[in-house]
Amino acid sequence: MSESALKAFDLLFHLSRSGSSSLAKLARDTGWDKATALRYLTAMEKRGVVERQEGDWTLGLALVELASRVPVTENVANHAKPILDELARGTGETANLSALAGSELMYVAKADGGRALRLRSSPGDRLPLYCTAAGKCILSRLPAPMRTQYVAEARLAPVAPNTITDAVRLSDEIDRTIKQGWAIDDEELEPGLVCYGMPLDLPRYGFTGAVSVSGPSGRMRQSQEEILAALRWAIDQLLAELGGSKDEDATPIFGPGRGGFKSSDWHRPGSEIYE
Image (cartoon, rainbow, N blue to C red; front, side, top):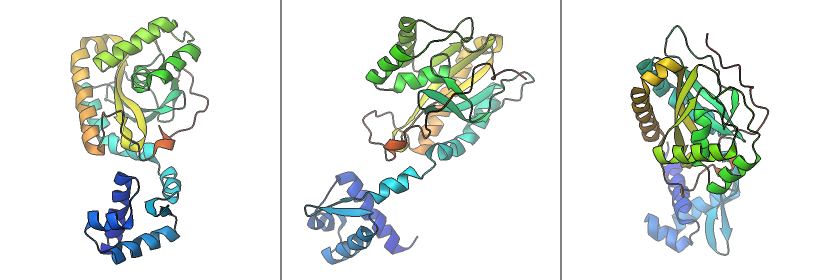
């Protein structure tokens, strides 16, 4: 990257931290002379990348347009795939990365563990939040008013014999997930299927999701502690890889695109079967 481009990015990142700044303060904080700083700012102003407001410089609306075109969830999935592959190899079960998609979850990346009996799911499949481990993880990371609204308004249909259909029980389950840091789908989506999940927050990218491991109930219950340890490893790796943070007050760069998807009809339960 050319020195000129690097200088332009230096100014943009400085403005992202300060919110707004006078030319004199920009020059002082960056160590540039005013003429150089003004030359770069004026060039970027022509493209709408920065703006002048009451004498101070701020980031411009053109950045919002650029940010809206970044395939955030796709990029997160690409970074996650090697880690999911390792998670699946280590547990021998199916590993999934899911993202919040409107009021449902969507599988965005998957890795199979190589067992003869494995969960069949595909990126793009959508499921409800209330009857999946990943969904409970996502609910546990939403602001309290959004959780309350979801529990109050969701149609808690029984999709399996163990599905939680009582709002109070679901609230208790979300609270338990918040306290312990992981969730279980105990045959609530499919009879014979158990899934463990842990939340994945990437506030910088406006990404709210979860990593989960699914398999037949007998194998999963016997290996619970090993699977939870493997999930913790995967979450730590993803946070290190993508610069994640558990700071709920962090300001997302791509906030308007939280989760990366628009809501639409979800993939009906029952299609995630063993093969």
